[in-house]
Amino acid sequence: MNEPEAQALLRRGIAAAKAGRTEQAREILLQAVEIDERNVQTWLWLSAVVNDPTDKFTCLQNVLELDPDNKHAQLGLARLKQQVNSPLQQPSSIFPETDPRRPAAGLDTPEPAEATKFAKPPPIEKHVSPAAALLEENLAAPSQPQPVPPPDATQQTSPDQGPDRPKHRQEYASMASALIQGTATARGTLAPTSQPPAPDSSLPAEQAPAQQAGDSFCPFCQQPLPAMATRCDHCRLPLILDCPACNARVDVEMTACAQCGQSMGNYRHKSVYFARLAMAYYEYKQYRKAVAIWQVVEMLKPDYPHLQLRLAEALAGAGRPKQAIATLWKVLTEDPGQEAASLTLGGILEKLGRGEEAINVYQEALAVWPNSAKLHFTLGWVLTQQKQINQGLDHIRKATHFDPEHGMAWYRLGQLYEIIGSKKQAAEVYRRAAQLLPQDKLIQKKAEQQAGVLDPELPLPLATGWFEFLRQLAGPILLCFVVALLDSGMRPWWIPGTGWLALLLGLLGAFLWTSGASLPRNPVICFLAGTQGLVSVGARTSAAIIGGVFWLLGTVIILYPIGQSVPEVPEWILKLSLF
Image 1 (cartoon, rainbow, N blue to C red):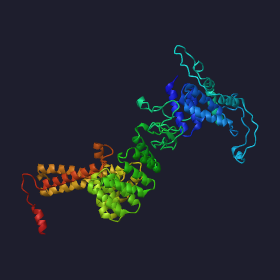
Image 2: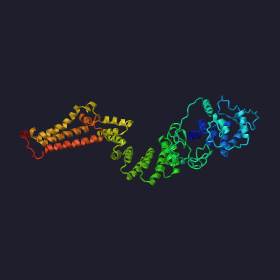
Image 3: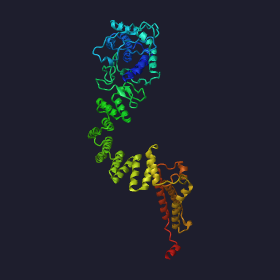
């Protein structure tokens, strides 16, 4: 006997029954019966999902043979007796039509809709099938179940034989495979049902809810429940939830959705379990469900971290802005200037067209968090929307200062530079934004395109070739050399050693300046740093600044030679000037 497998099937069958998937539950529970025929809980649940009264009677009678004091089975048998005596009851068996064990047609009665037309239904001739007659006979006889003898450990018996097997179950279990086949045949398909993951076995067994045979208990408060309850009347917690991904009905005891495999979590963690579900609903834009579950979390643990903030976000998404604003003001009253709450409240106020109120909220939060890049960025953009361009530009600059990797801040800064007419700066900032924004986003493509429009880059052959590199390098080098010639009286042989060293320093400065300012992928840089050249804006800026400093330093050394006096002006220059 594979008891773990039988228990897993029982859990799946119960979950399917509670979720309203009766046929699936019946098939699963029949499989569980084949594996473990002495499980009272399996027979009880099977009696709830079979349709034919004869099948229900067999299930309940087996329960009483295993547990003579079971109240559920006694009550079920009493109800069955009333149904059999009712002239309007017409059984519907789950046996296939070709199965010889299928009960024959029962009472030939009119449809219930027609029967309600008569105050007193006319007498009907009763045609009782052999199966229905057996049912009435058993229901009429007083039920005195005998205790089940324990199995003999020394005697090996097959699953279908043995003195410990209830007599009704002996017939019923032998038909289990036929019943499964018959049910599938009636539907016209044998498509397998989806299999949910096995229950989480990592938790100790003692943490599982203690259940007695024939009882149904709330997994949260352990109070007795009706078999098909979807919410506990004692602790008010839901027992059936919708999957955030596919909206299939899932029992709280299932760790994952049987339809799509979405993780549902461990219900034993209570507040954490519901909080994670609420966040999943919010991610899937099911805001109303998120609100309902956050309210469950509030009932379980009112001080759950960021509870009111998350609830307000869900309320705003569900189209209830007034309640969301009231909740956020409550949060800010208890914790003035909280960054996340201020950002959320300001965003809601903006959508409602209350821009001035949103600006006040952001400014109050900045008084508490002056270095918050998010607050500076959001406030700057709202000010821009209010036609306060200069103030908005200042705040967005601060956002890029406090968070240099904030791609959207760089993009907005480029837009503002473009508005005020600084096209060169706008192009540089757009290129920085294009490097930081996700490569697969449309806004990143827009940043690259706008940078190319404002400051077109050289074609790739020119940007990586020697001709353009030497052309741009020649200007600063020639200027530095002319200064050295003038300093030596146009006599190159008079240039001292320090002058030649200064020329080399100027050459290095010109190379770094050209590489950082205009040709980051010149042949020398590609040879030293790879084919990508100087990719980051920071590397290009640093190279350009260092190059400019080196070039100026070389020029100064040439004009004021170390250890020498300043040379006299040549006579021919004086004569030329006298002309």
